[in-house]
Length: 331
Ligand code: P6P
Image (cartoon, rainbow, N blue to C red; front, top):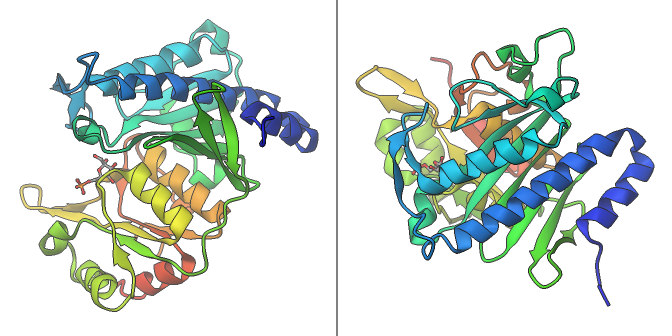
């Protein structure tokens, strides 16, 4: 006897309340299928000899792993044949990707990080796929980059698939955030945590403390407060989806401040607004938390200016994020 709902059963119930979510529900089901395939590929990567670098760098100037390419190509090819999307943006793609003739009249667009944290693949650390879905702007050509410069609060579906000790799909349509766990035996994602709510008492803080001498004074003070006064325990795995998921379930805060780049004499964020920060900010707010850029701006209110725009990031329990924001000083 199956003790819980499958993702499909959950979506059928969801459609009763949201009859206009048929395409979005089918799209989430597509993403779940992609997650099953990537999960299988990452779990057998060592055997299939698809670990390691692909020997090229992406638009982020990052070393591309073989599994990055596999995940990116899988997402593009699978979603292209569904006809549910007009265009796609990806961390691994310089520009917007058209979703074929079948997508010409589609109402939605998607931004992806097909395999976030992929530098951790070779050491068996959890990695993830992050997705962010918007309604297409009808007045614009589907290939117009402005389709992907909508504020994060306009997202209609966002989530991630975490490939860890188990494979979990965490998502929100904007009416609560839910978790499904992949059951190998059944071959389905089963509902494992409905309407996730951040614990009132946070447990962890996550920041790469090796950056302490490359951040602004107010970020240095934030890192010191987290370590010495917050009462939180340090946990940092260096894989955004894994760090974020742990803190959402156990309560806590993740911070990636802007880092000083000596060559360019400028402070820059590492994480990308479109397909990392916006989906995570959407989820954390649905779980009762908060996400800012570290300069007092709500992530979901930021108007992106570029497809691969980066930003500073503080995300987690509202009381902790608000405390950290009190350290901000205008430059
Ligand atoms: P650092 C992985 O490369 C990633 O993009 C995120 O998943 C992760 O949170 C971050 O970078 C880790 O960066 O500089 O601490 O290694």
